Length: 445
Length: 193
Image (cartoon, rainbow over all chains, first blue to last red; front, top):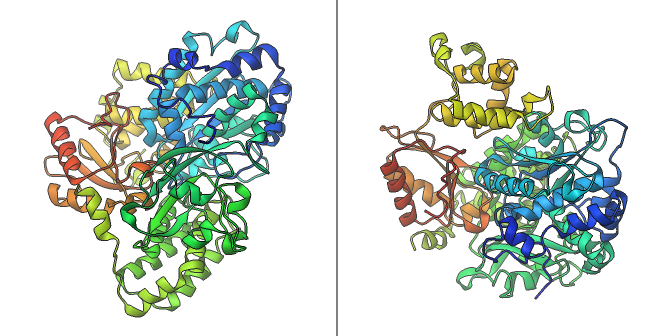
């Protein structure tokens, strides 16, 4: 069994309540940080831990914190990005729903390190019921003196609020999130200035993912050096993986970074193998925007080494033969799955979610969806594969925010690794969805 | 705000005069506004629009948006540009229960399309339409973060997961028997239904 630091108590009855959470060691990091450490010491531990942003980009958290501008007399803010919307990702929802205090504890400890008197948790609107759970937990924390004035009798005071969104994937991009938090459309801002200098209402702001903030608690408790001993190389600590698709045991798993992909898919501790005795065809390892890989390349690198669940191993080989850990949204597909149709659902998603600011993304995502629709209708020509490739290549790097890349990469990877499937449909002028019966089995059960 | 701004709906002055939050809703709105610094009340717009949508029949009419602008002391166009950007705000009337079936990757891999077809047949409507009795509107949605429990649909605050045809039957029957408006702001979410 791997070590768990975030959701080890998820099965404890009533762990969502403050009483039970504290009885299981909750809020120890707040006690330790506020009473025995300076804010800079907390930041140092986070730096030493090697923690990297768990939202998808994997940027070192301690470094991000150290960029925070600290002008006199200007408020600073911590904003938690709980706008989890990357297809295949549902770990933050799991954490907030089951152990909401783990997030609030992290918010307090992190805000102390950053000198933030106020923090906001921006939760995607669809997770309204989760926001209720988090709000209840916040009320409990206030009542227990863990939020508000002079927390635990110290000089540190802090207010934490929840804001719900309105339904927009783009608000997971940190500057779009800030726009949304200011009551505007979720149009990403041009950087620089970065939020660390001019964020919420123009004030210095750190935006961190739910899991990142929750991970600060064990880091403070055990010390950054100890945390860094878990994992491999620059992939330290544990990571929540959202597993879905054609696996026997979908769900959220906390893994030690460094286990093999094969172990994750096939061991009983995690996904328990592919459903109905089918063979694995392909995996999207880190949320919809990372390149899809065929089974042979997700299990082993191009060099023939076992692929590990780490930032480095998953990206080994670049985009030619590798992918990314991303948000940890792990979607496994069996041998009957149509890669073209799955790609269509992604293309439709990105077209729907493009904010419309930049032409390459706004127009390109629409064109990609339309062309993929031709494949499903059986009206595509072989030249449409080239056209699709051409369009995706003209989006990457030409937009304000990374939604452009997120939309282009899955198209590029599907063509790179499964071109024959596209050509077969174009040649036969027929799209046959053989996975249909497999799906029907499940919902007629 | 007139129909020239709003596009599809007419602005009716006498309707506008009747719109007012209940005391309970107004207290919630004031609570939300208090989360932000003085002068930053515009930040409350997204959550307040959710409250307004639940309060005024499940959608945001031009009159309601105009009212929200007045409450938050911002321009009506600032409300409309936000309401029209985010997918959770309905700018046209909808049924009491809006069924949003997730259709992205993991849900598709697990039969979301068949769930949509099943509901279409059962309610005799197509995606985007409302039943004649005004009870149900069927929509498709993009990833709702329920990939491990696919297929799923959302109705108001409730997440209905691991859907089967039988489960869909129960959900539709239960909501129809209740006959009440379902909103994202509901406290009585029915995730276990």
